[in-house]
Picture 1: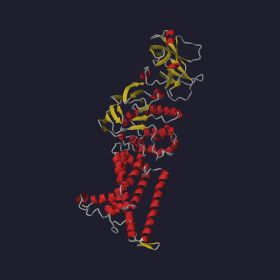
Picture 2: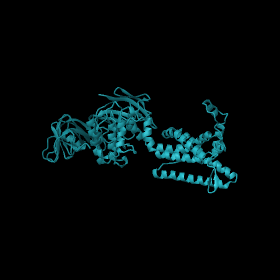
Picture 3: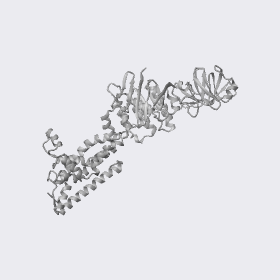
Picture 4: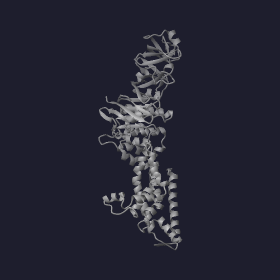
Length: 356
Length: 231
């Protein structure tokens, strides 16, 4: 597998990016995560060659993109870039924006299937509009189509959802997932929203103060109780499963021997879905209670009991198929149930949602 | 000589004025564009120095500018010697060529400032986006920057042309008053007044007044419709 590796330095006024050595697998979605001002965008611009003051080294596989101050210009890096606010050319129609990318393809590169991309992205009926007459979501779709038409080796997305309302956000997330699986292009994705990370990420690059703090997979990151992905809602688990057809007005999600039941019936075209569970929505029972309104009972094993603040504990569980789940309960409950590592019990999930 | 409202006026100074203004405009757009682009993208503190230098002709009395140019263009001076070396035979003082060169300095801010403002208004991210679509620097300039700063060019060209038409001090100092060579309309009017030929002065002045008014209306019309900053 090719990797993107290097060590980049870029000083911008009072801020300095000093990434430290990194090696990113070019597969699936790699999310750059951090607070605003942590250097995510600067790193992505440095990787793309968009800031000529960048120093350090950068290799895309064996190809050198940056060596000291010498840099391969952006136009030779085969990068697709989707900017926060689309950055469409205002003096051109949608079609002209798209053709700008197509016309500049090198002869050695096979053009992409224009009609297929345009219809997948959902802008086939808007090709002859001026870009100033598009909604925020439509603009971002055009920007994605335009980036795909450059036949990129890597697709960079700088907070592509931040300017959109929640409905467009949900649609765009579905679209981005679809694109990742359909075209198999590695994606570098910037966000500061944990929900987007949980939905899209294969691996996460955590950034703070202009440095890369660590690079880990989504599951690794969600298994830490101090994960930066946990915001004011506390610890979160992401479970992966196979959606089955609707029964009893509920959507079953198969996870090994366990089945999760979702009340969300939206059409699912995917063969695998991610489900987001808040630790505070998971209760524990020593036996499988039958007379209870909660329908999701999963058999689990206690892996660890982690004390938290305010007399609360976080219980790390392993489900039958090996996936991990957090439960947040009080210290008192933990003592009452006499929880211990290796204990078999049932996790009762009050509410689950498809990762948004 | 033509007769307008019963007054005999020589059109030669008018043609000369238009010729000098046209050349100045062409030259200034050619050198003003890269200069304005460079200044618009400049981030270092030295930009202030450059901006001040470019704006200098706005505040300097034209006679001061003309005086220095007269000294620099001295037929025995370094500049002329330098040009001789490349086979230039004429001289820059009291000649049409010298007038055009002087006008280029004199009208510099009127070309560079509107262009610079237009270039500054082109968002960097559009150029970044173009770069990711494999457009090189020149490609980006011609396909993104130029179309988005059209109005800046229109304003720069109009103002440069009009301002050159109206120059007096620099012409007087550098060009003198040679018919067909350096006698521009403004000088011609001055001459007529000096020799108490008020009728000719009236006709020429009225023509200048109307011309200037039309040009300014054109510029403000462009500004109002497209919102270009000037000056």
